[in-house]
Image 1 (cartoon, rainbow, N blue to C red):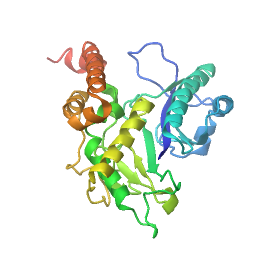
Image 2 (image 1 turned 180 degrees about the vertical axis):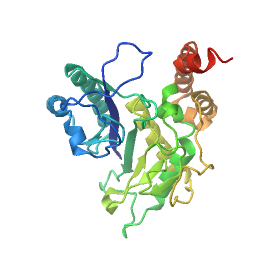
Image 3 (image 1 turned 90 degrees about the horizontal axis):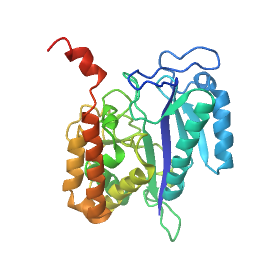
Length: 319
């Protein structure tokens, strides 16, 4: 039985009616906008207390099992953690939460966005997925041995994530904007390396008790469909256990420079990887894969029809 615990990151911004204009940091209750990095700042999160009081009240009424709210690295960037539980139930909760968060923001005259990379030169927003597996018969976790060390099944689970995440990346990074998040030194991974307590790797094993042994998949963006992203992440780990895939050696230090387990760098490349993987088609169904890839390619064609402000700024008078 899989167990998941998602972490949802998002930005609060000023309301903006013109999509050609960059998003701006909203004013808090002090009347001032944030500047600088304020990770985990209680005071920075308190700037929006009236908004989050509504969010918690509304989520409680709807039965959403929220855990903690923290301030992330970007200006007015927040993270909501959900308590661990059933995968499908958590996907439902994320979907309801995102709508609730956007509605609460509008009530307080700001906007909430779950874009993967909404603001230039600021960190992107992720949907980190902590995942583990318990034995259905006993309820005991299968990722730790009796002495507290990582089990062979756990290592195979990580190996499966490493092998198949690049094949299923469009389910973790579904939009052209998603790929803007994968940059070194921006709190986002650029590969599927793994390590213990290593946030520079795509896969992190947090320090925990044996009962809570788990892996954190740091690849999904906040813009990902939670049903598809959770299903894809669990499928990757499952395939690793079935195929007995051994992971690479864990990374010590920075993982950004590692190049052996890099990700596809564009959505076009990622869609081709997904379409070409026979194993993905076997488990998700050929019709689903063909349909998903076709929709994403159509969306990308629409994107390519739009001329960006960057092109006008740097090319209009110089070519």
